Image 1 (cartoon, rainbow, N blue to C red):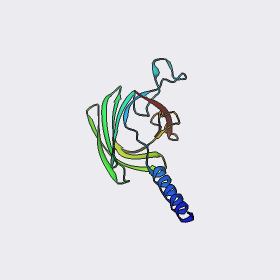
Image 2 (image 1 turned 180 degrees about the vertical axis):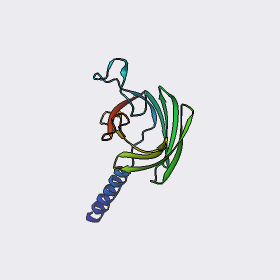
Image 3 (image 1 turned 30 degrees about the vertical axis):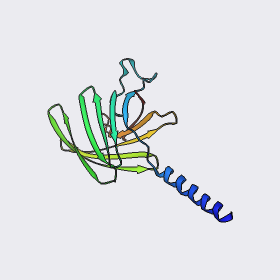
Image 4 (image 1 turned 90 degrees about the vertical axis):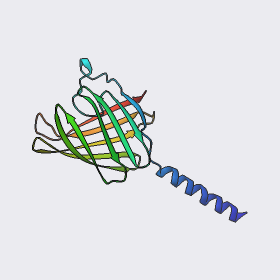
Length: 160
């Protein structure tokens, strides 16, 4: 009896550890949650995933299709921490991006480097789910207007 109880306890601990290590799925179509503090017209500046985004995810990759005011952009990231290369086509310019995506507990951190008209630029995205299942996107980018400290934006998306 004591041995069976010990084995059962070990199995429960192993299952709990495996479940705790399973990263969340961000797959789905997401729509920006309106913010009461946003200026009229919904202007928030840059950051996040645009107004809507569709995310597909498997064990190895995460693909984000963003719909923004400048059009639709698709980025695919390897989830093993190795480099992913994407091209951002913006107003006739092709900008090569090199990103790494790594899990930090239940958050996915994506760091991206690019050269923007001769200036090296680094950005980061952190994706997580809040307790209600909404997607929280924290993005950090250089302050392009003031040249000061990086600007961080935190936006919430609801699954639609």
